[in-house]
Length: 567
Image (cartoon, rainbow, N blue to C red; front, top):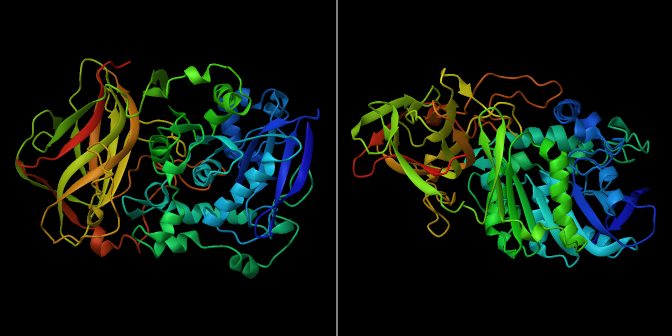
């Protein structure tokens, strides 16, 4: 292939971004696979993220086959596996990142407009057939929602692979509770390749150029030339204009869409892939839900085949059977990292039986009939209150949204509620799963700050409550309030003899801590998506005693998406 390094891409305000273009040697007009982001187009996957690369290739050797791996870049396609099939692969360093100058402000409207300009530039290049597709994981998926809503004329299709959609609800404030992820992500993964780090940072092994640009700015100059995402979130507890700017209007998306989500992505992407699929205005849209890590499914032969079939249809006009594909494919999750594929025509899955399981404090059980009881107290930072679904002599499947309806009081003016769904084998050992950002995740997670309990009636459903996060309602100590808590989409087949538990507590779920070499965080079951900031969760308010109430007129229950024909 022919490679053009550091190609200039002009923006509407006169700034020039830098792109690497991988294209077939034979002249012609080819469809374009484009991505733009802040991770450094010249940073080799194996150098920037060595443990993730090593573990991925060990688990799936096919990823490193039929390629030299010289151009592997974090969360982007390997051009050696795309260019031979007649695609041009374009990687652009976003404004202020890598080799592109400017003010670094991730997921801002300026960045979305830059992405629009990159698409329009690529659509008229002499090697382009005028059809641009967007493809990438995580950040390179998230900004697809934004730019597609702006409707650039040369955008032909998007493949959003594990990408959140709602900046407030998906990324930074789960149920109104601030997520610790943002500060570490920005400083450890983005700032290290900010434009101006220059020769103090990584060197592109293919070009010999500094990944973060030839300019070498002082630390003070670098700080002045970037935003402060974590500071902005800490200063804004409620949803509002800042978050709206970073949350796209999904209804404006018109291009064909393929959304691929991960059951184990609780804490960042899972919700967005589902919400994006449902809310997008596209008449041609597909959803796929899988398991395993955040990146392996993207690079496997199966993942690449799906991506090429999708883009072959809309960028090359191939008659390859994609248009006959049902709208939804779920890889239904079983214990032991086993998945079974099932195709459906819609989401939520047709035929879902929304089943209420009432909380019984007498037996610590989930039952078919409500039970009245005295309030049950629990220490917020303790082990919480556990309710178990009775063990069945047959398999049961739950795939889709879940929700918890509670009545709760606090000894203070607020309470943070953390909800966990856990699976246990017949020996009583917890069964965990490989998650997108943690090797041992539970079945499901949900969160809600009690003062943020107000619902948007127009956007809420019984199985997916939607909170406004705009009008906090402090609690009166000792007085119960009603809470409807969203549990992010999940999938589990519970085999005969296994047990599903619901746990209500006031802190993050934890299992055994796992140290991963070269990783940016210690895992404990939720990856980096913890909620421990003392300014957001002052001990005098949240390290307290809460009570669950069991009013027979409004009994608490867990709502699960039961699929009667369990695989």
